[in-house]
Amino acid sequence: MILLPPRNFLALPEQWSGLQRSRVVVLPVPYERTTSFGKGTASGPEAIIEASGQVELYDEELDSEIYTATGGIATLEPIDPGGSDAAVESIRRHVDGLIGQDKTVVCIGGEHTIAIGSARAHSDRYPDLSVLQLDAHSDLREEYGGNRYSHACVMARVYEFSKDIVQVGIRSQCREEADFIRQHKIATFYAGDLKDGRYGPDRYAWHDAVIRSLRRNVYLTIDCDFFDPGLMPAVGTPEPGGFGWYETVSFLRRLAAQRKIVGLDITELSPIPGLIHPQFVMAKLIYKLIGYIFQKGAMNYAPALNTLE
Ligand SMILES: [Mn+2]
Image (cartoon, rainbow, N blue to C red):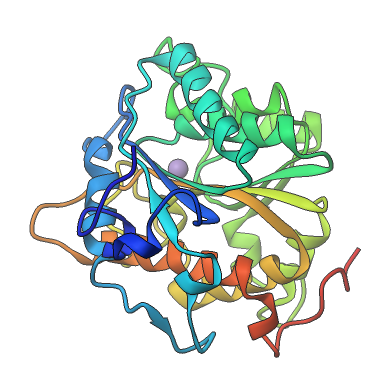
């Protein structure tokens, strides 16, 4: 079942939010079981969708009403996937069905755990795929609080079916995770290195370093705490030294131009009563990303596809 306006993403009219024509589908997954510090991710999807009604439908950067380029954007009813491994399987099945209908799926969490099922569905469907994680945390613990499906273990679970994981923005982890990264040669790009210009003096140099480490198809999983807590305070585990708006979208623009982003999720938004900008930021980020994915031609200043190996 799809959501009708004004409850769908962007509050689009019915002719632009039907499932059949829309090439993009928003799947709200208000899953919350294991958040460790702050709570409230279960209301993340609703807050983002509500805030999305305030996002301008015209994008000045792309000179486009992005939703028309995708034949519309459909928003599904939120799913309740149950708990732990059953949740992973339920989300995987939902997402797989949508990929089978040739949809680009945007999962909105909920806690980061939802990424396991969605990444699995994309990994099963797309050859030559990397899972790209934007996050303050590595999420590579084998288990956390006795739970292998904790949001602190997401990428350890993903690694079980996809060895091609790339992490960007990391600035908090335990020794077990640091050892895992070294032992398995995980492509982890630490926030401190990116900010200090370790990948080159140009402030965009790290973009290419990250993109070069990615395969042709990319599944993108974004934990909101990738952003700096100043911009994104509504997270359970805020970490200083995060990323700003323009340094993030300029990276995503270049990524979308040079690789195929086949699906994505946005997780861990934990709304703060009375504070509206965090959910608006995430709603705008999702719309921008859809624009970058579907309107490559509009980005005449971006390099052509596949100029990087
Ligand atoms: Mn995180």
